[in-house]
Length: 415
Image (cartoon, rainbow, N blue to C red):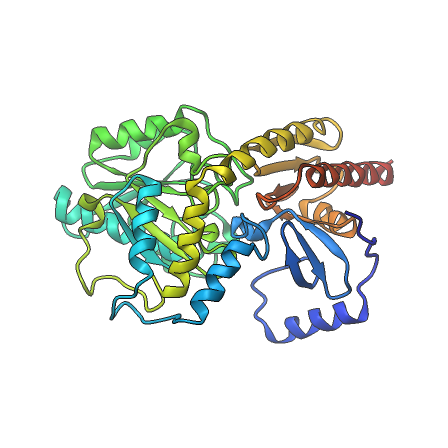
C-alpha cells in the first residue's frame, strides 16, 4: 500500500503529459499522473508507482479495474461480434435489456452509450410523452430541473446548467427548463404547471460536491409528480448501480421514479454503456426512426452490461458498498474540525469540504497524489472520494490517514 512521494515529474511522465497537452484539446485539467495499468482499486503509473484510485472514473469503475468477470465477458464477445447497429437484431441485446429492466423493476430499456446521451434521451422521451399522452400543446412542454445540477455537457444539457465553466460562451441555449433550488420541494411545486412534463433530479448531486438532499425531498417529488401527472426522472448515472450501498440512491428513501437514467458503471469501466429505463406507458411513446444510436445496444456493450446487471442482481456489491461506506463516512467525519469543515455522502461516495484557509480542493488532491491517493476536486475547496466497490477496508483507512497527514501538512505550513 506504499507509494513513493512524487516531488517532481520524471522524464517519462513529463514526456507523456507534454504529448497529450500538445495534441489533445484542453477540455480537462488532469492531475500530473500518467496511469499505465490498473487492478482492482489500484492503478500504476508509467514509472511503476502505485496509487489508490479514489475516483473510479466518476463511478464508471465501480467494480474495479480489470474486473475478471467483466473482462472475460468482453473478451468472449470480442471473438464473436462487436457491432451490428440496430438495423439488425443481435443475440446479446435481448438478454441485457430483459435483465436490466428486471433489476430496475420496469418494462423497457432504451440503450445508448454515454451518460449525456441517456439524459438527452430522457428529455426527448419526456417531451414526446407530454405531447402524445398528457396532451400538452405543441412546443409548450417544460421540465423542472435543480440548481447545482450536473447532467452532462451537450448543448441542451448546459442550457439548464448554472455552472459557468460548462455554460458560458456556448449559447444560444435551448428553452423549456425551469430551475429551482435543490432540496426545496415547495419550489418544485410552485414551478409545476399544466405544461410540465417532467422533474429531472439527481438523487444525490455528484459534481456539486456529493450533496445529499433532505430525506423527505425525493418522496415529496414523487408525490408531486403523481399528483400533477408529471414524470419523475432520476439521473442515477453516478449515484446508481451500487455506489451508495443500494442499487439506486432512490432506494435509500423508498422512491421509484418513472424513468431511471443510467450510465458509467453499466459499462463496467470497459465500454461506454448507458440506458433510459422505464415502463411501457412512457418509453413506448417512441416510434422507429425518432431516436437511435449506431452503437447503442451493440453486442459488446450488451455483453458487458449484462454481466454488470448479473453482479448487481446478487446484491453483493451493494452490501459491500454499504458496509465499507459506513466505515469510510465514520473515518472522514472524525476529520471535521481538523482541517475538514463538512463531510457529506452515502455508501462509498463522499464530498469533503476542506477548510479554505488551508487549501483549495486542487491543492489537496495534488498533495494526496504525492502520497499515493488519487481523488478529484470540485468547486473550490471540495474534494470527492469514490473508490471502487472492490476496495479493501485497510485501503480506505490508509487513504483517510493520508488525507489527515495532508491536512496536518497544510496546517503546519500555514502557521
